[in-house]
Amino acid sequence: MSKAKIIDKNSVESVLGEKELLSKLNHPFIVNLIYSFQDHDFLYILMDLLPGGNLRYHISIQRRFNEEQTSKKILIFYIIITIILLLKITLIFYRISNRKHLNRFRIHSL
Image 1 (tube, rainbow, N blue to C red):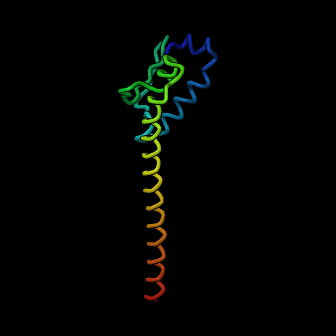
Image 2 (image 1 turned 30 degrees about the horizontal axis):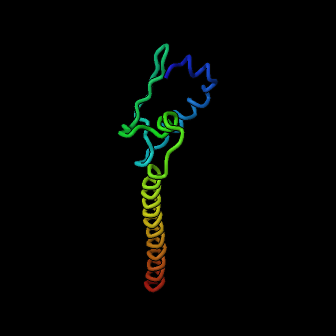
Image 3 (image 1 turned 180 degrees about the vertical axis):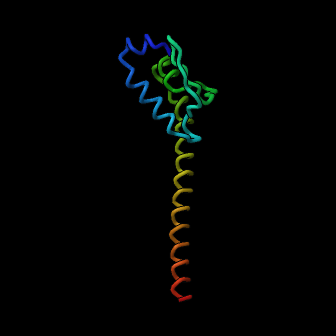
């Protein structure tokens, strides 16, 4: 990223905030920041590979997406989110039931 363009667009705080946030996150569903550095004119950010490109790029090229382009992707997104939530809920119920079982065992063993 060109430092001159960042300054011209008054995006210094935004870029620094994004870099700080990405440096703290590490998740398989988020593009992870691997390394960042700078020289006199540019900022360099090494991130995970996005084979299809990032969404911001696609939106800037093609302002609107038709239903065929989005419906399958939205369906896949909802299926993935549903699976993640079900796994979290299952884990929560497992922990709760495990605690109740352990508490009963402790009471009976005293």
